[in-house]
Length: 173
Ligand code: GNR
Ligand code: NI
Image (cartoon, rainbow, N blue to C red; front, side):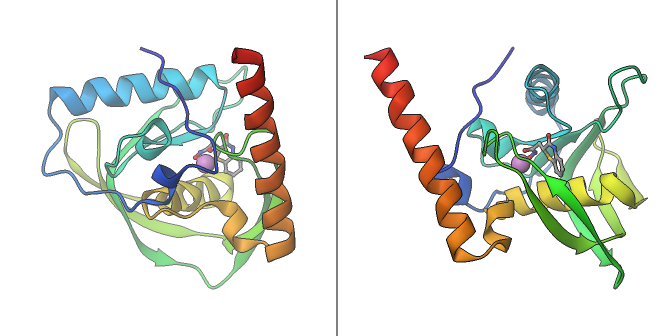
């Protein structure tokens, strides 16, 4: 089932998400919906809070168009280590449609999480995957990539999004 993605500014996107005790069938169904919603957007990652669910759940797939799908399900992801070396990527966010900015983050990170079957796993990531993981874990703590920009740039993006929201309201009414 496709879910609706929340757009900034929305107070829900600023809430801290709760860990899960285990991965049950309801969680699996939710992860299936998140993956479907992410592919359809399209995006390379989605946190549960982006569809209004305040749980520490993330789905990621950084495979490009032609490549075979390679979904990653992360429950209670915890970043154990961040490299000193950083890298810069142009980031986008499904909750900040059509807004992009270069963000500097640790180039590598090591992650602990529960997989789709509730099994404990570890992962060492670099490149786009490391950036995406950090972007998603930020969502679970109520952080968006615009929080790393100057107040001027951040306010400009929020202003644009408020304007777009008002325009869609007008279309619906
Ligand atoms: O689709 C997405 N692309 C992206 C590009 C660079 C860094 C992070 C991302 S994640 C984003 C989808 C999203 O909003 N995930 O929360
Ligand atoms: Ni995002």
